[in-house]
Image (cartoon, rainbow, N blue to C red; front, side, top):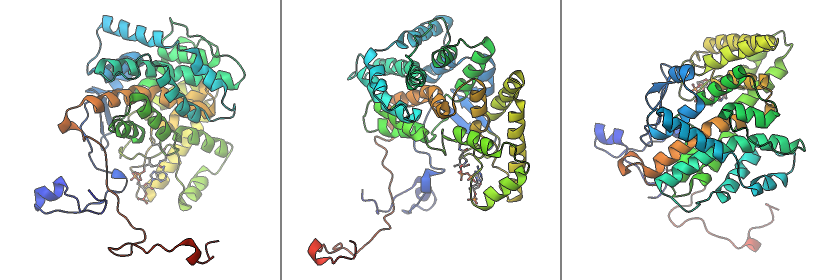
Length: 412
Ligand SMILES: CC(C)(COP(=O)(O)OP(=O)(O)OC[C@H]1O[C@@H](n2cnc3c(N)ncnc32)[C@H](O)[C@@H]1OP(=O)(O)O)[C@@H](O)C(=O)NCCC(=O)NCCS
């Protein structure tokens, strides 16, 4: 189909039977496929994974169990969880060449660039690269979930001139990540806080990075190619990069007496307040209160709760200013509090989006498998939206090509 051909939409067909042309800039409000993995109710601030509300999982589940749920459509039994956890632990050890590649990269490289470059290297470390069965893809998913944190922690060590640390097999996914990152075993409370933060970030329906993964998968590409695209999409400051931007905003504001003035000025000049607003939630993001509570609890423990107080003041002022402008639906999202929580855990600022990837890879891989193996009615064979051409147009014949010597010198 040509890009400028009129398209039939189900809406148009149902109402009038006529062909209508629709333009949904940025695909907002468009349903592009079915999914059984997660659901967001943006009006009521509800997020469910495979039927379970996120609040329920954050209270009682773990990242490992939630990752299993996202991949298997049901909670595991004790033995199933033991086996799944064992596979995750086993996969933490990977071929030496993966770190050799990372050691050759410039030390000042951004962790998200390193991670995006590392994912195809992990493809080369996969023992069954060409195997596209469901079972082989489930095994690749386990390897990716297990290895992305090892890469992120390993890069932190490598750029400091140290060697990556071996995994401690008895530690949970979250605790082992902090151990491999900092060289210190976290206390139980911190490990559980990170476990909950990872679980809360594990999936979020068709967000930009997940859609990037699904889109690449729809071409028939392998899981690593899809996940590399997901990492790239996550790095943007309107998506996963927002958590880092929130801390930058706080550093700019620290000691600032006139927070309302700063916010007004920002809004008047068309700048966003990072960590607020969401493309789907038109109320409070249900993940945000967990991270808010965590921020205050950790802040108090570390005698740094002034940092959280500052965030709370920004939240209050910004939501009040936005409400005055008729934008009362713009409320804190998950990124507003998460970066501060990670900071209290000793995670460096430029690594915070990579921590988001450590969590979201559970969802990405579940979506890749769903995309690869879903029934034809539930998904398109290949994502291929249309665009509206608004460039030069010279009629049916097209523009006349003039040889370069006849075009003059105006364009240098
Ligand atoms: C995520 C985001 C891109 C969604 O944008 P969106 O889909 O346009 O959101 P909405 O339609 O609800 O926005 C309604 C209005 O509020 C404004 N708005 C949304 N978030 C805002 C923010 N953080 N600061 C200031 N204004 C904001 C929008 O520009 C829009 O204004 P308009 O009606 O004058 O065009 C946007 O909220 C944003 O950039 N937030 C900051 C980055 C961030 O935290 N990202 C992480 C998301 S999990």
